Image (cartoon, rainbow, N blue to C red; front, side, top):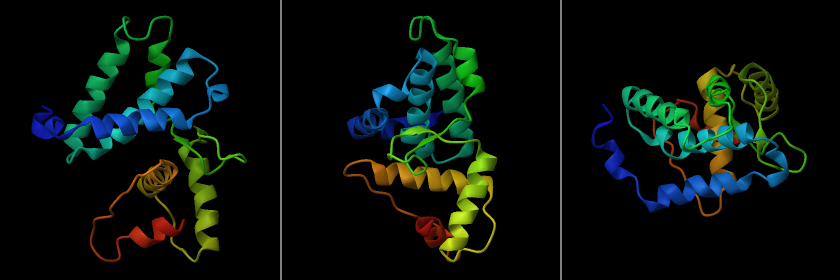
Length: 164
């Protein structure tokens, strides 16, 4: 059950979704699957991440995958492969020209970010969720007129993730 959380989405959220889509240069989208993967990633970042509970996020992802499987929306695209690749994330911080591209696997990204973290004085290892938070932070910083608020207890790693 998605509940009342979807009532909080507005045109600003949809605008952020399209702004994220427009971050990716056309040259980086070689196939229909690339476009669908980018769209899925942006829906997850713009809409699903804002849901308050993991249960609602799981229900929203299930609904997202149902929409992706509808042949009327994505004809001539192997959507099942896109769903299998749903771990793909996009970002700008690893490309030489700051282009919004698919980032490496989470394990590779984790080791790269831990190396960067040690250069900024963050000496504790990063877990997968922290790596995904860095991806989210970098995405928000790449969008025009965007903002984010870190909420959590003291010593939860908010400033460390921001430094990375």
